[in-house]
Image (cartoon, rainbow, N blue to C red; front, side, top):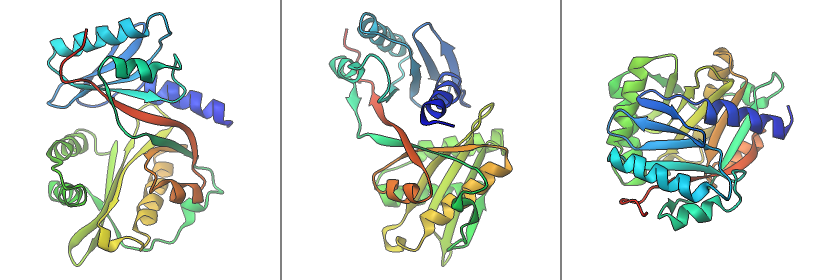
Length: 260
């Protein structure tokens, strides 16, 4: 599959057609919004805008989410139209976070990722205690609380155990590295998340081990592709195993108060 074909498939399945537990999917002629039914922020994952309507539609969405008293993220990709969409979002008060690379790999039988010997014992996590270990790890690495993430992982795992797979690596009974994967419903993709390791345990191949076990699980569940929004630290490892960049992604955070 060519790069353009794969990007079109991603755009159709994981942006336009995305459905998430805990969210109401609402489709308009110009955006697909995801409204949280819990205490989390909402999302706009897909848009179809041009220079004539972009500013008006963005103002409408700010007003819509403001009425719900719900902050939201506008997920922007570097191929989105109009070309100056990021500038328009900035003008409307959005905060643009650092970009990540949308990395994708096709899981065919020749991929060395599927045959990597594990450098560590990887444990599949299925209990609330195990998920709390992941949250404690994330709290320690990023020096901020991830209680909302823990609630979401527990909720999603309980609702459909086959849609979320979580993994951790323990040393001396302490979780030192963790990652998870969503098996996107009605799609060809597994979506990778996490991949965090305590500083003192890096350089041991833990990230690779967690990548390998998730790739095998994706194939086992009938998925053909893996996708991840990758940081600069992860990109070289992903390149090594055949991932390539489809686009840059930006999480654009709505202002605390809409600007009209």
